[in-house]
Image 1 (cartoon, rainbow, N blue to C red):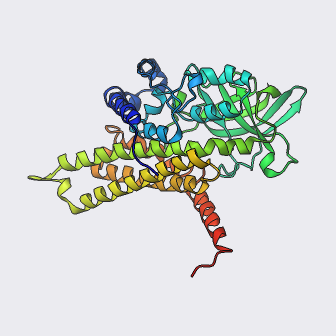
Image 2 (tube, rainbow, N blue to C red; image 1 turned 60 degrees about the vertical axis):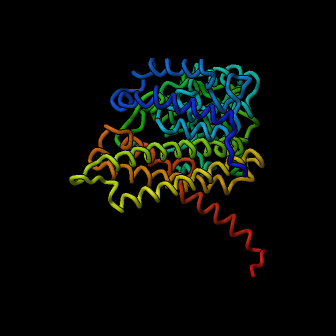
Image 3 (spheres, rainbow, N blue to C red; image 1 turned 180 degrees about the vertical axis):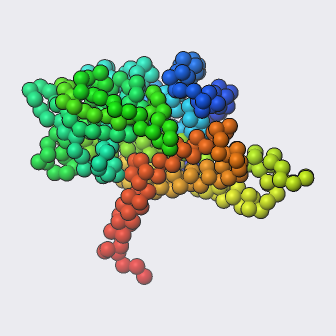
Length: 401
């Protein structure tokens, strides 16, 4: 793989980094003390600036107003934007909208694309993705209690979902529900577009995460579907294709997440190093003089570089051979990068001491909100088992000398 960054991408990433430093990082104190809804008018001004710079929706289709970057190119963008919690939202490539845009583009009808995809890419509306259920393992999407039963030309949906991120204020949800209980496990469920103003779509709450319920885009909704009726025309793809579509969504989505996490690593690493060289611990001596701090910095620098190269390699593999053939690479980056990020955040917090526990820096926010990285999109343990099984299968008929 060629790790050379093109001149075009060097220019784009430089512009994005400058924008993040000048326009978004200064907004973080407000993010830590005010609700997201309060920040929306100012964030919309920033989004308009991004549009004027022609950097809007970097990974989305050009025919719908995006930049059309490939996965490896967007990985570099995602790294830059990950340096602040506001980055992806302001540039119009935030989850869960990014994943919903991908599957609407791949599997949506022309009518669905005009009604939902176009305004989503343009940033006029937001969406959410409703798959995880309260009583069932999120890491096994074939286990699902939510049902969508045909009634005339409609589906009637009943079930309970949670961690439907960004449901608060979303215009529609893409819901995973069982449409044929008698089918094989991987063909039982379908994905269905449900406008959030549909009777029977009931948001119970924003789930408190590490003590923060959040609001608007930064919320995680618990949703009750109670006789929620939508047309069958709202189904994405053929009936029973929900699991297959989910796999198409999750593969590239892990690249987005992992490079965002690398951006978080870079930000926390910078904060850690700056703190080490400026924090006095004795007359004429700073934290940077301590060998344990030097060891942490050296380890984190190596871990970040290794994780970054792993993600870029996985993105390159997906671009060249597709997500299915790159399953091992996708699974490996999920647990390697998540653990690297948590290590870097923890070290940065430790170096900041008592200050690290406060919201006077962004580190504590990252510590609270990114611990979930080792759980969502498949827990670490699930990915490790899957990778090990695939590797071991190769040795069943292979003779090693």
